[in-house]
Image (cartoon, rainbow, N blue to C red; front, side, top):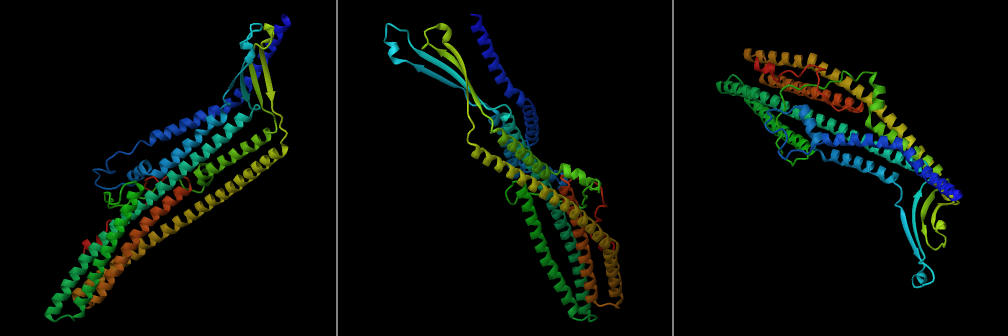
Amino acid sequence: MSDTIGRRRAAGALVAAVLTLPGCALLETRAQYRSAAQHWESAERDAAPAAAEAPFAGAQTLERAALVAEVLRRNPSIAAARHAWRAALARYPQETALDDPMVGYMAGPRSFDSPQIRRAQRFELSQAFPFPGKLALRGAAALAEADALAGDFAAVRVRLAAMASALYDEHWLAARSLDINRAHLDLVRELRAVATSRYESGTAEQQDPLRAELEEAELLHREVELRSASRVTAQQIAQLLHRPDGAEIPPPPVELTPLDVTAADDGALEAALRERPELRAAQARVAAKQAAVRLAKREFLPDFTLSGGYDTFWELADQRPFVGIDVNVPLQIGRRRAALAQADAELAQARSEQAGVRDEVEAEIRNARERLGEARHGLAILRDRVVPAARDQISAARAGLETGRIALGDVIDAERALRNAELAERSALAQLSQRAAELLAALGRAPTVGADAAPAPPAHEELRHE
């Protein structure tokens, strides 16, 4: 009797040990899964459903921060990336779950009708277990793939924020270009009236009012082009907002608040190499392939199935309860070696892709810094030299026209030079803001509003003071 009890205790200890091993190996990955799930839930809460009403309802002007926030809230590409991340997370419980247990039943049919023997039946319950560590490796690979999708989600947010910021600059530039064109149209009309009056009095030639009329026609056509460009920009903004074409977009403010790039110094490169979402995603994919390699090596080890039940085929009652273990024999070495070779090759591919992404990020940061410096220099040249010279030229030309020393054609040439200089200055300011957004995106950051540069001067100040 004591031998029977001892054997039962030993079998129970064996079963308990086998059941405990996989759970211990999974504790760490389950903690990582809970943390990743909380991260996704936080992103889901931040992405509250967009309101039914149009964005910016009641806003007098469009602000950059508001536009970026609405794009990040409404754009379907972000929602798609977030759902892809969630789908990847959902793989972890599937990869780390045991197979369903099996319930078996066996009977001796002729024993049911025999008055001489008892009914012969066999009840069995079995559970398959992979070799300890396999489930944990499967879970680690699934979590790493989910981390990669989380990086993709963050990269989509940064990319769309940069696009929204660039369109905001285009929206501002279109409005200010229309202001410049309108102010110069008023000036040309004034010059045309002067030329017509002088022609009628016989103190000017006929070509003067004709020249002014041609310039006015050109400005009228340019206004049509600028309004068309403004509508195109508004439609692009509406597309980012997932709104139908023609959605009302408030006008931009008069002054352009530039982006804050004070933190984008040389020391930010190493931080960018840690924070850039594409690099984090590439690193996570390497981790997933590393787990796949370790799992492929463990596939050379056997899996097993524990079973237990009650068998009335045995006459003695002590023989009827039973426990057992089945172990597969991993004889298909060729298949497992091929799977390991595949996993090794995929790991090498992921590492090469990670190195390529790192090179691209470093090049993007260097190029973005170079373009930002070029944009600053170009804006400084226009503000400090070109625009002041053009203003002095138009002032001198108008003074000469009043004294009769300069022809109307020279004044119109000076007006055109000033108009081009003003447009170039506003364009350079918008480009500077776009270059700053490109640098921030290269560093893995969404555009933020700051005070890194002086705001744009009011348009056409020199025309109003004439």
